[in-house]
Every structure is written in C-alpha cells, then in structure tokens.
Image (cartoon, rainbow, N blue to C red; front, side, top):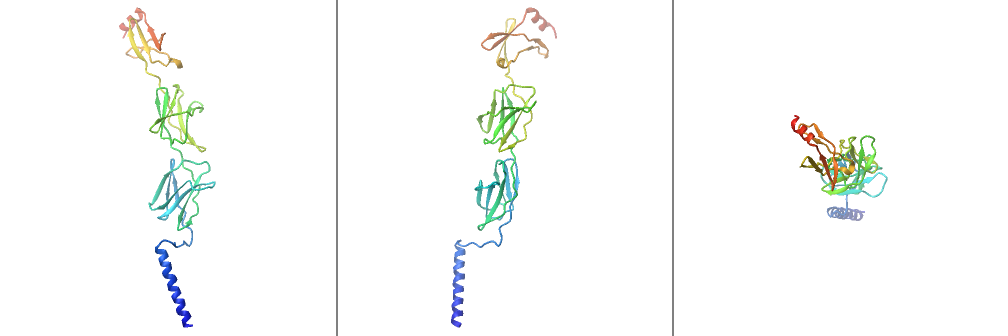
Length: 255
C-alpha cells in the first residue's frame, strides 16, 4: 500500500512539473470557464469603434449573413480599436476571442456614409469627402431626378462631374453604397465662364462665352445699369456688341 501511495505522489509531482513546463512554453493555455464577454461597438461615418474587450483578445468583424471575417486583428492591447468600414446591406457583428474561446456576437450594426462636400466650378462640380468605392450621384433639386453618376478622378480625393450646365433650380450630391445613401450636400450650381471683352471702334468683341448652351451677353455701365444686349456672331467664338454713335453718346453722357 505504501509503495502504491509513494508511486502515485511521484506521478502527481511529475505531471505537475510537466504541466508547468508546458505552460511556461506557451504550449498549453488555461481555458475560460465561459466565453469572454460581448464587446461594444460604436458606429460612425464609414468607421466603427470597438471597446470593452479583454486586453490581448483577437477581434473579428463578420457580415451578419455569414462567411469568414471581413476584418480581424490578434493581440489587441489598446483600450479601443477604430477601423474603416463601409456599410453592408445585411449589417455586421463583432466578436472577441480569448484563449480559443469566442464570445457571443454583438448586436447587428451598420456604419453610415460620410456626407460629400461639393464645390462649384466652371461648368463642373467637384466632390470630396467620399470613398472611392462608393457611387457618387448628382441630382436636381427641383424634382430629385438623377443627372449623372459619371465622375472623373482628379487625384487627391477629388471627383469631378463635368459638363454640368448651370441651373437656377440647383443641384445636390450624395454618395451611395450597398443600399445606403448619405445625407445630401447643400444645394449649388455650376458656374459660367467669365467673358473676355475687347473694345474696338464703336463695338466690343467678347470671347469665352458659353454659346453652346445658349448663353447670351449683355453690356453694362459701371453703375450696373444695362447699356446694350444685342450681339452678332463673328465666328471663331467671338460675339460683337456693335453700337451706334447715338448709343455711345448716351452711355458717355448719362450718369
């Protein structure tokens, strides 16, 4: 009996020593009695911030309809983790994994889209503050109709709607992705070219006029009153305001 007891104690000591060695080598990990707690997710504009996880956890973001993680990072030791994430039509969830145990998923969530920034240009509208992966849309304010989704990449995060005819009913811009639409920009319209006027003998020649979209020119006095608005096309993009001597005398003598 004593021999068996001594042998059992020796076996126990050996097993305990072996376990300590394996633990020190990282070959064995203590198991949680239950899965780790559910993390917290705060959504933003094309971002999410994850918090309330165990230091050193592996964080994973999944699409709510299944599949492999769309993002993951191991051994996260910061108190929060913020990542860029575009919306998904069926939402997302997050888990944390500690010592091989994965938590229950967070409630489903979806980030929003950033509101674009639109700037009027010469027969163009430039758009910034958008993701290159979204669809940028130009709409009319009057009826909400879609004008264009075709933009040219100007570099530096600038996307341009070209050949936008100035319209007093105005335009607005949104970006869309995966069934979500951003808040629209403030209303705006594009600009016309600034005419270039050259004086002649009893006439003024004007170039750089948007005649292809029906723009007309008018001559104004320095006080802002209309002086003349009848022109003839001289070809080569030149319009002429031909004035009689009587018109010239009237312009020069009247205040």
